[in-house]
Image (cartoon, rainbow over all chains, first blue to last red; front, side, top):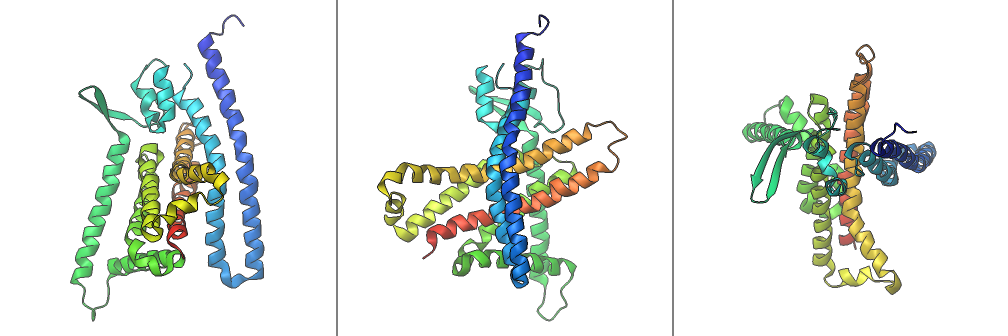
Length: 85
Length: 253
């Protein structure tokens, strides 16, 4: 442990933190999959409304994606901007 | 140290890594490059690759619109429309239908702005395919788009509902702070969604191009189709659709 400087330790911890931040991707994945499944069921019931259902699904998925993107922003900042020096 | 925190708060300065220090700044291809630095008074103005790419996209759009304008003006009603006129009519009709489907009778007021937003964001997102660094992968480009939407939402709301626009915000009196925060979160989530999607695509493309030479034969093509074309089209659609939804929410009956 003697040959690790404080700076290197901070970078290593930042990388681990970025990895942990990306766990936020689990939630949007579940949400988007659920929305897509429901949309598929809706198209099966009513094929005539396919275009309406598709646009609604895309809008809902984009909103559900937001929380995952917050995690991504944190991870990118930790990895590349290096706020802790 | 204080520089780092400042830059973390303002994500457009992903270029920060290449400007300061220099000791630990590996130059990744997906980072914003600093091209020129001006010192005016005490402030520094940075010309980055975002500005250049934005200029290229804008000039492309201008040239296309001037050509289309010339052709459409010259066209006679009795002539057979040419290729460019056909494509232009198709695009305009598609955008009109898209706006009409969610704004209804208010279409005429907003169709110009929404169409401009859609085409601009679409061209910005796709520019990654042509070797540029997508301008929308810079938070300084997407935040103004969110702020424009924010101003439009409240301008239309105040114009339509007068003071009721503000009294609506404190409907259950206890929830007033939450409603205000919810209103302020609109531009941030709108811009961060576009930025995050395009940024993640840009970073992943950069990482794929950093792989050993013999791996990067066919893989980048597939990744470009997903990250630039598919994701770019979806995000352009989503940001214009959400702008319309937020505005319709305020001016609706």
